[in-house]
Length: 254
Image 1 (cartoon, helix red, strand yellow):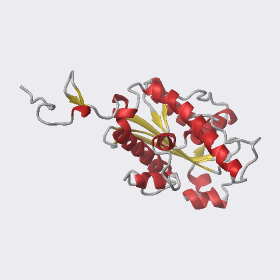
Image 2: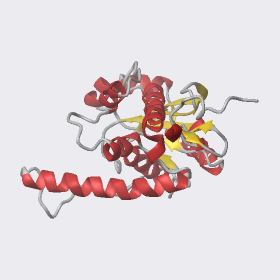
Image 3: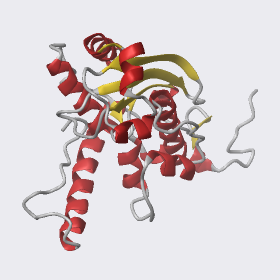
């Protein structure tokens, strides 16, 4: 007969007393999608995709599926953007695929994950999903209007560790959760690191996360709005923004 873990001295709070199984990360964390874009700039309505990555991780953070794209964005890539992700206009024109094909395939890959009920991790999700939506409209590709379920480690980290000082960039947050990020600002590296940060958050805060990923998605909508309101108050107080121009808290698409 298997040993009773509670009787053996294990902390009772860590166990489901009906099954005597450890209470760990939610079941939806066993398989997660990951998504990241590198682009020509930071304006989601006007800038273009340069590289993209969509993949799948298992509960250990191992990559089980991966697909990357290099696009010819159809416009010059500013030197500032090239300095971030390393892709020049000449390289994209020589080796990139037509932007419409890339956008259509990225939309298709993400749509397949959502249709299967697989949550997709994107760090600062409104940036990637909003830019993808505008790119889809630009190239007359049916967009993903309501991506769900989405997991945004930036929103989760702010929700569960709101008062930690310092920046919340992916590289900083990955280091905080002891996730290795080699090749920052490369779409595949960023996507995988974001997924592993999400798993680290699940491991640390699993008892506070809902069992249903749809509920987590809904929670993040509210948390992102609240975080934007708090940031707006701070920026107004230090004179950085006008009170009539608040931080946009819509999530996961703005």
